[in-house]
Length: 334
Image (cartoon, rainbow, N blue to C red; front, top):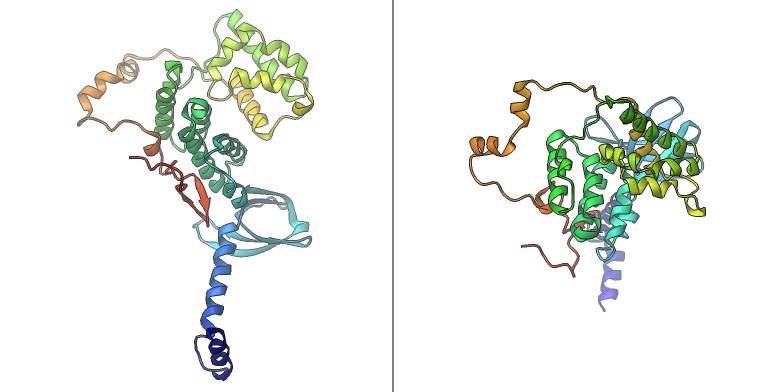
């Protein structure tokens, strides 16, 4: 009867008069718009004319790509770009991939964060990578805490944030070297022996980057090279270098993230920070942070926690309908 009444009402109301028949259509249209917005993936497009366009993918076919372009002022504008004008299209953040993440598999968060870190030029990819690294560290601190925090250090958006990430890395990994709390020493080695090791590491990186894995592995396995690489541990860990050098069917090609790390490491090796003696004033500034804290701190500081490390809440690990929520089975944090 309810269905009959609805049908009768639809047929007897005049076409021009506003009524309840329009409400379901408007609601349906609104839902479709919401769905389209929620599943839109972030994209970065390089045109053949040299323009870089950032936005959200709306639709695409063999002839053109339609996006909501994010402009400099933060607003969006619908834009259609012909396929013939596109040199490269990179999907930066896929809503489908985010929706597939489960807190029972924390490694997936870390792995996707590493993929997005390569696309850090896109702000949305940068933010999402930080969130996923943080979530991975929160879900499995003992297993993924160190690698995830190192990833966050490389994505820090300002010096203060980098210092917080380094401090959190030290807290979450009791075995960490205290050197992680300060910027690594990247000065050029003064003596000839150290300079030789410096050049060996550079040779290993270049050999790996050019596909000569056996040569790179032979150099990377040297004890002195392993020790020297600790100066660049915020860029690349020794075990990562060894894994990348190991020949095998599954490791023929370097991943985009590994290639990016190797290039960054090579640049750090060939362009070291000039070494200099600190003045008394500089020594005072860098020495005894605890004494400075006692003199200047207004009161007790809140303990550093993953939950307050960034603007992201790592306990909200489920992506649904365009938003991050706490999984039903997860226990709320106090």
